[in-house]
Image 1 (cartoon, rainbow over the protein chains, first blue to last red):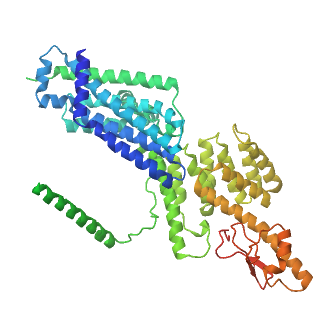
Image 2: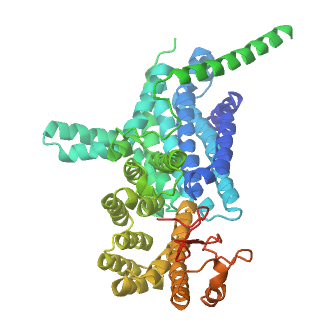
Image 3: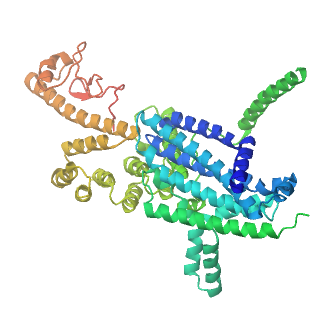
Length: 257
Length: 300
């Protein structure tokens, strides 16, 4: 219950901070795309609207996860509201989990509205029902799961670092997470045993975000299988839980006197 | 209120000044031109795919649109300096294969660039066109349309054996229409015939969603019809010459025969109309027929 209250407050705070205003920019982007791409793309506007819409969804989402995520804890410390919260019967883990869920809810609303926007744009282009408007939703789910992982990463860094450094580190994790296949290749092909071990360790330690990169197949109407989606959900849950546990451990050790 | 008005005026003035300054800077830039850039791509397609992270789809779209703009811009620039009829082979489009290669490497399932490569790149670099479509087949082995396009490229090279093999192989794929296998057989038997060409273009027209490809195919179909009409008209003109010992002085001399040959005539002049409904010209003192300068039928 306490966790839900903190989550609800975190969501309200994000709305008050006008985080959802990015939706206006997104809608403008889609409208411009739907109107002008027919002229520029030689009949490929459906594919381009999906690529554009889902890519913007991921990019905007990552920026929200990073820039709002790194401030979740820091702002409470800066404003000294954290002392009031922690003086109540609320554990530090509960506080972090509530903050995390609040931002995840914000991202869910954001991604959901954007997804509806992309589907409507596809229907507008076709001037009728477009099967891809439904088939993109598994890809949207995976984008959302990637954002929940990035939120957990941002929250972890924000428990021990400044917002600027946390944002930078989270962005690096996002980049490396998309190069995870290369880490595996490096681990498999390196002749040096220690290097092999290092790259293999990094491959398992850092988030494997390539699992969630299905925007391009989605634009061709190829949806990931149920098993892939199930594994992706399980990985996002386990990895986020791991990061939140680590964040709680660090946050519990901090002295706020 | 007064302060806000002052600030608003300052903003508008600064904006106008900055637009003027950008114009002035652009005018002084060496080599600034509205023509499409021929600057080579410095990043290899494989590296670009790596760097694109999860955004390779939108990057592929960008290079696809850039390819279209590149060809369109080059055609417009060429038209300005060469008012006479021309084909794509006359224009320097050397960067096009690289742009299409970039797009297809970023998104190997993107079929449109392969189709475009099959229709346009043979004019620039036939081997590169074959390589591009072959890579498309390797990445999309179930796409019969790519076999159709590969067959088309080989047909243009007059390699009817390979063209036939492509149509036959594509015809065996699930979902391929029956005419693919039939085209395979036809290419083998009469690859160089005009009827085979007409059928092939008709299928290309029906299977393509790209307006520029459709336009190109329409022109080729018009050209094939023109060649048929030209043969018929020459037959009529030669018969007239054999019967009268001279060439026709005007189209009216041969109007009845032209009508019998199935040609549509211009009601005013009696001249036969070409596939774009433009009257033909009687040339070489009435012994030969030529296209009017205003026709939409390609000269080459």
